[in-house]
Length: 208
Ligand code: ADP
Ligand code: 5GP
Image (cartoon, rainbow, N blue to C red; front, side, top):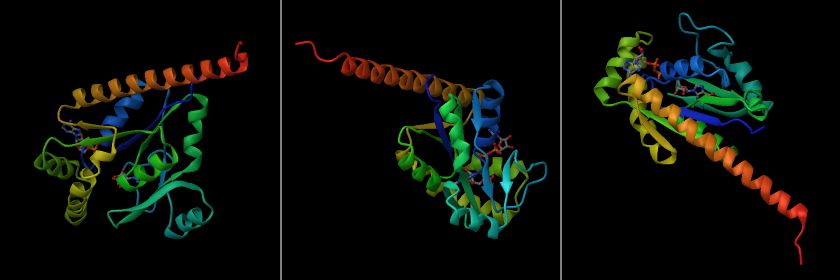
């Protein structure tokens, strides 16, 4: 059995990451969304263990101290977010693991998991991003401003990503990501097959 892909999805707040991910998860039962810990408060409708594991500052600091995170970061200067190490293990059972994390976390994951597939989601324009964030209606004007201020910095990391997908038409963006996943699976399976043959040749020994 081939191991699953690790897919890292980043992008400015309000660009549509959550919307895209929900659709991908709905269509693919072999995909697991890594659930992060956060010190931010749950939004209306969010659930413990479904959207995040909600932690106090003290609990989060304790987890950092105990090396329980694959990576963690302070995002927007508003709250801490971290990926529990345990979320990645399903990869070894052939499940694709999807991480929706910020650019700092993504950089750290790439160092630890070099074959992670890095996808940046970009908006078609700044105005579209602004109106999506306002339209979602989940943040105060002050928090919207902080999130928009961070958007430029996040997009400036695009060069470090394997793919940048523009989320203009939702169906097109989702299809682009499905195509990326398909291509990356071919690559992973091909490399595993080549490695297997190399081992077989080594075991066979050189015929003189
Ligand atoms: P993120 O998870 O990146 O912060 P969301 O998935 O919450 O963003 O999307 C922000 C808002 O934009 C939501 O109200 C969502 O319905 C809307 N949205 C997402 N993608 C599109 C799209 N392609 N076209 C129009 N609206 C979109
Ligand atoms: P939100 O508060 O809108 O749910 O998420 C805010 C930001 O935190 C998003 O950019 C999201 O990608 C990022 N984020 C969520 N979980 C993690 C995590 O575990 N690690 C890091 N580094 N960023 C995360």
